[in-house]
Length: 109
Image (cartoon, rainbow, N blue to C red):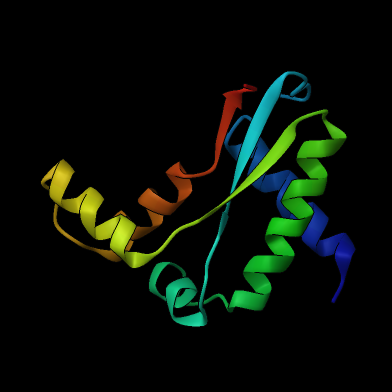
């Protein structure tokens, strides 16, 4: 594993989402999956191990910017409940959008 490439990916990911440089007083929520199948449901090209590597690097990124981090396990059942509430149809794009929306910068409690 090349941590330099992982960290570059995280930097690019954060830049695309306009994550602020200073996260002091904020909580950054991170996405975890309980099983390999859950991970593949949302990210067909990503193993659970790769997701954990990404999440670890993203947590370091957030803490380096003075954020508190919080992990949330997301399952397909969470997504299906969201689909019903939003009255939208399932698609790979919708899954990607849903899971990306779970990464949040929130005021610290």
